[in-house]
Image (cartoon, rainbow, N blue to C red):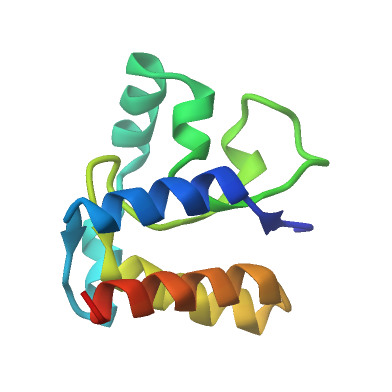
Amino acid sequence: MSATLNDRALGHARELIRSGKVVRDDRDDWSEDAPSTDQQNHFIDQHSWGDYAEWHLGVDSHASEKTKGRYSFPYGDFEKVHRCALISLESRAAQNDHDDIARAAKQLLDLIDNK
């Protein structure tokens, strides 16, 4: 995966955090809180691929447009930012040498924790 930071998603996440749309949960909660495949498909059907992209800090410009494989490192449930998602994706991004995404996740966590 050659994911790079999705700046539009980073801006969207910051705005959500500033407006209080945050779930302050624990690290291991993301496996239960992450949107299911059906929820993802429903969101795409009701919105757009652009809206779907805004919920993912990673984007792979080599992957086909309008596919889920193009987007990675989700940080929320299509309504709120989940702290547990940011913790999980920061670790995963760092392990896979996506340093820009890991730094962005850390910045968002700091924004949540210092609010």
